[in-house]
Amino acid sequence: MSDENGNLWAREAGHDQPLTTCVSGGSADPQRVGELSDVISFHDYSSLANAKNLAGPLLAMGRPVLCTEWMARTAGSRFETHLPYFKENKIGCWNWGLVAGRTQTYFPWGSPKGAPEPKLWFHDILRTNGTPFDAREVQFIKVTTGKLSASALPQRKMLVPTAEKSSVPWHYTLEQPAADWFKPGFAASGWQAGAAPFGTQELPIARKPNTQWTSADIWLRREFDWPADLTATPVLLVHHDEDVEIYVNGVLAGKAGGFSSEYEELVITPEGVAAFKPGKNLLAVHCHQTTGGQYIDVGIFIEVAGSK
Image (cartoon, rainbow, N blue to C red; front, side, top):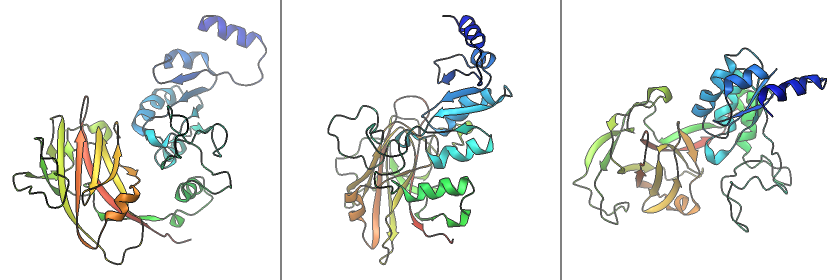
């Protein structure tokens, strides 16, 4: 059935609700969908930059816009990233998972049978006992929807700063180093000194590197001080394009495939958390690039309680 015939049939059926058909990535012509729909709807499970690119032309059509499928934490679609944008642009949105139940949508697509519960849920918000997967995430939803004051949110305290506000020095190499390059005792005297972020400029997504990096791989090392009396769990803050591996004192602390178009939190492995020690520590990073843009910057923060 053609678009025209389908639209004609739907309207002749005497509908009593607005008609729409979904725009999802490149699977439909947004302009034609807009012409045929009373309200415009789309699906998107990717980064905020991609969501904006998809939603922008739809908003320009001057009709109500709905995002009827979204929120995939491991793909960069999160409440913290997308909900403020949807609110600002009056885009109605809902995710289809709430409690981690039979649909098992807290697992990412392609998870094998019998896989353990992932450290970072793909979807869903609550456990079966009603407690949230991420308490801060629920607080963020309540703040964004006006149920809580913004001061109630835990605040980030950067202990190993990223280069978001000012350049940060690292040692780096573009040549394959020895196998123990990520360990504290490695002699990196021949490595270059450079300021993060490293990569290529992409102004539409606010990528402004301080050090140009255009090869396939980059290896980074940086020392940092860690407080002796700290009990809070550290979290990585990473802007990567593409695959990244991060080590603390020679222990794998986190890894992520693909790319992010902005700074995103990355949960540190239990082994990585245990590797932190009072005083001097080593942060080591490897980023591998295959195609398109490239970028890398890494920091570490803790959360401190906000006021009610």
